[in-house]
Length: 146
Length: 338
Image (tube, rainbow over all chains, first blue to last red; front, top):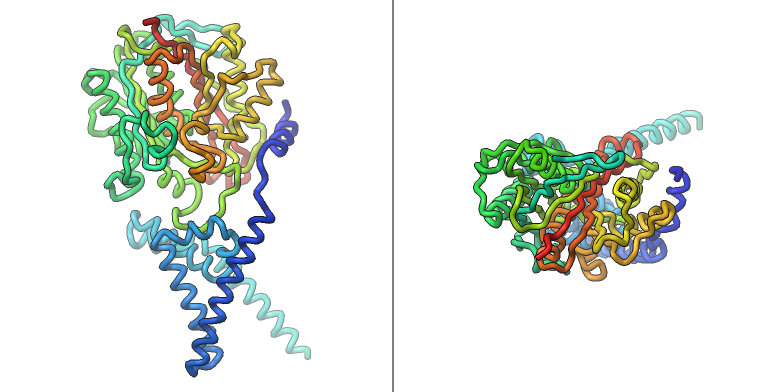
């Protein structure tokens, strides 16, 4: 049997991920997280802070909540149903930093926790920052000629 | 003395005996359908240790100690111990077994390690190089996850083809004479790679290797799948087992209802959220050293082909885009007539 034949056999045999179910979960949970963020922001604005500060408090509250849920072994149980719903919002980023920090603590505070904290989030930072610099440059050039 | 039969099989004419065996398992495995059969179930997955690696070492230490006790043998009587696990540089074995003062040969066959270590032990005993040998292997869900996948608390989603690494270990003491189950033949498998690259579908990566090894054994010994009470693969899970049946059909050795897989037996797949089933060295090791040898001892099974399967990849090879080579080793076990 050739590899091609076998891979075809595998495609026919292996169950597919339930994409529709996953999408609905992601939509509902991801949406819920954003609604919670919006409520916190609105609440803080009602308390008299400006929109900039309110947004900052909204995001940091979600980050803190995500970190705490991760530490208490709850985040991954929600995420296994929610998928992209918990991955895409800022909560996913927080989880991806806290989870390796907990995991690699056993290799020490420097080479374990600190060095490996960014094993998952590192690429997001590298390419996120690079992309924003490139977009910034483009924007700057465009405004020069305007 | 071992004698070669056909291209791949070694017949052990002295038929080495399994003098003692033991299995230990974690909480989830203890809650599974085979839970009662394990010698020890650890409710605390960390086994009271500071790291997952130490916990896995403790699993091996515990399994080996219990197998020695059941065989009524002291560590100093063991000539060679064949040991392996899934961790880099086999550290679960090294640190778990360093206190015994037994000559050790570390083995790596990924999840096929139980068949590999048992084969080595049996061949050494049958050849006369040793009177008594041991085989021990383990895996731990938490140490395997951090090495091969993501940190435990990372919120990811597993596809339905993914398998769950068993927290468990098995150990067997092999010697000559006595009344235990006998090891009749051994077939060492070739590395087989049909180009599966999805590390979340190990069953598919390993199924062709299992098919090659089983077919090689059947050809070498001129046997048929129906000649055996049980043909059991290590950790193909639901996808790999399905594929193996299809592959064996094509080889004109169709597998009947006497075929199953350790990864399908160890968990209740409907209730335990393990997707395609169990995996890891500890999967085939703990099922062999509880369910299979237990049933053989009770006379319910007489003639068994134990085929442990391994996926020989590393995170580095996967990231570099390599496919996943599979391997499978076969051990033919025969129960003594009462």
